[in-house]
Every structure is written in structure tokens, then in C-alpha cells.
Length: 399
Image (spheres, rainbow, N blue to C red):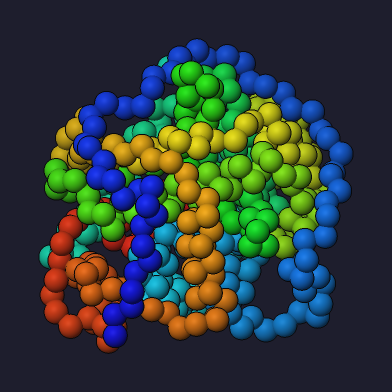
């Protein structure tokens, strides 16, 4: 019943030595924020049947992508969680959907309290949840080292999207002037797949020699052990997805018209007062979502593509936060990543049933909240206790 897992690309098969040093240090001189000027909305080529199908009569959602990610975008963590275990991903979607119905939540009709970030210088289940909380708390610590959270009240879908884009703009400014930023949200169009994807990068640094952005993903672990190959592979996929989306943003024209259409947004809608103030403080002076999008486009164009040969996956000890258990630097493999994304999409688009983990990876079942409901789970097998890589996703700052 167990499916066969995808193979790790040849370029990643070499065993990486444990390293205790961080990546190249960068200077972090605090400077004033860059002001972005509005630019005209770009024209784009026709991207095929994807956009054409959106103009057709609205139909009932018949795929997981339609049902659970419509108007939200496909999360990068959806890719990594699907690679970890498709069956667990399927269970979690149905469970989250049922919880939402039971709570009868309607987010669009409620006032929300969120955050905008500004640069600043200078039993097993219980055990698992405690580890998750420790991991989240650690990410908060890392974020607060370089970012200052400012509370804002957002009231509409347009406000929510503007908030993500403003946080990205502020983060890019900080990256340019200080050489480092964290918790950077991405909203990007994956041109080859014809879909919108979203995610949040743990850390972006400027390389000390070629000044290209270096992407960093930080994981924390309960035990002071090196993670398994399955866990490393999952982290690599996540980081490669971020690079793919980043490079797409800086290399292609941002399809703003399709962006508004897909996410069901009104570009002329005025921002809430808190966001107007945050925008002004950041030097944007945007009053509408359209103006924020134009600043987002400008921010993307001022950046270069990410470093091809230096994606950084770091594992820290939860017991001793200064102890780096493993730090792996690896190269981007675009062909392999796109095959992995396509394989995940086949499941999300209903082209095939969810597969189970391979026999050698059935230890993952011991950490799955849905194991009692899964026909593939036959015994109590456990292997590792990485808080970030057990297939469960906890969005640190989902805004």
C-alpha cells in the first residue's frame, strides 16, 4: 500500500558535513527607507488556458486547489507538506474545512488585528505540540532581532493583501540597506504552472562578495541530532520553491490584472486608516491597493535573482539555541523542483488519488495526528522529533 517516494536529485545526494559556522557575515548599517515611485501597470502576454478559463462561468469547485486555495493562492508549505505525505495533507484539508464550518467563521465580515513589520537596526502529542510552540517562539525571537512589529487593524480582503505587500516592500528596503531581513512574505505567479503561490521566507541575506540575495530556512529540533535525509529533502524543496518564486518576481512582469482577478480584489479600494499610516511611515504614501501593488512591482524590479549555489538550511537545538546542529548549503535544481511541483499538482488537481508514504518513511506515521484514521498505519514507529518537519504546518505570521 506504501507508495514510492521521489528520488533526491543527484546534486543533493552527497552527504553534507555538519557545520557550526553561519553564512557569510554582512554589514548591517541602518539607513533611511527607500521611497518607491508608482509605475504604470505592465502589459503581459496571454498565458494560455489558465487565464482564459477564469473568464468562463463560475463553476462549483471540483479540485482540492479550487476548493481550499481559491482566492488565497497555493502555499509553499502546501508543496512541502504534500511531499512529506499526501495522505496527511488530504486529511488536514478535510479537517480544517470541517473546523471552519463548525466555527461558522466568515473572515471577510470581521475586523482583524494583524501586524506590519518595519526594519529596526541593530504524551507524544503533547511533546510534539510543545516542540512546535518552542519552534514558533524561536522564530519570533529571530524576527524581533531585526523587525519591529506594529499592530494594524485590517477590515477587508484588499487590506489583507496590501499588508502582505507592504511587509515585503519594507523587508526589501531593509535587505538593500542593512543586508538582512526576516519573515519576508511572497506573492508570486508561477508562470510555468499557471498558478499563484504565496509563502514567507525565514531569512534573506545579501552575500558578502557577489551581493546576491541568499535564502535561509531555520528549523529547530528537540534532540541534538542531525536530521534525517527525508527531513533535509523536505526543507530543500521548501527553500527551492522560495527561490523559484523570488526569481519569477524579479525576472518577469507582474501580471497585476490577473492578480486582482484571481484574488478577487478591487484595485481602487481605499486602504484602512492604519494601513495608510503604515504606508506613509514607510515612505510609500499609498492610499489604494493599486498604489501598493505598483510599489510592490518597483520593489521587485530593484532586486536581482537569488544565489543559485547557496541556499542555506539550518537546524538549531531547542535546548541550546546557540548550537547549530547542521547547516547545509546546496545548489538550486530547477528541473528537479518543477518535477516535484508538477507531481504535487497532480494530486491537488484531482488527476490521481493521494499516495501513502514509502515503507522506509513509515516512521513518519508515528507523528501524524491522523494515523488512527489512515489504513497505511499499522504499527507504532517513530524516528525523529524535528518540530518543523513532521508534516504539520504552523504559520508563524500568517497575514
